[in-house]
Length: 323
Image (cartoon, rainbow, N blue to C red; front, side):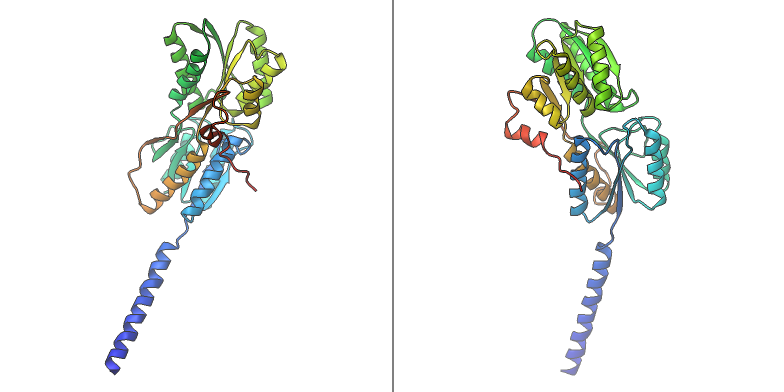
């Protein structure tokens, strides 16, 4: 009897020690830093909401940072360096400049940091996976939105953002190729503007004044779309200019209803944030060391005909306000 009691006590202690060891191994909390292109737009609010949901699910310490201006790649590079210095384990990164952000990302990887790219890729072999829109296909979709809804000859003006951003250039290339294949569309002018609504409004107004023959406008991200819609409304040319914008914003959604916007190419930023952080977790824990090199988060067209459908409403209003 005494021997059995001693054996039972020893077994209990062994199980307790095993339990303590297991808890210690699973309670490690990794730090992930999301370096965005901006922290100001509704697009990025949706990215952050998805990222925070994944961080909560996987017990990650998540830091979200980004520059004030969407053209400020130097600040992004410094943020990357600072995050590495402070011991981040992984970076979820959206590049402002495809080439000039690359050295900072390479240096982070050399320091042992795992790299996931979302939304806008960077010229670095250190990126384990890119999660975002198929931007060439999205550009084609924007062109098709105009081609399928308008007859006759199309004279197109394109409002793009930073010329160094990979996704903006891919969208432009997809749109131009689709218009060229159609045989009934001419791209009259392409402009690059700062990714802020008031700059985009001023540059779109100048474009329409210089080229009154333009009857189709394409704007390739949220701030340029808001600015282009403001210009169309101010110029009172909604009846003569068909505007296709990108992303979800209260102003452009209102524009669909008042006629200043005709269609929106809506991405899935919530999925970019969620899958970006989830992928960082998988890399850190070796849950899935061989991630797909590219994950397409899909896009859809929203216009007046489907604005109030359940799918459109979910796509348009996926973001959450952050404290």
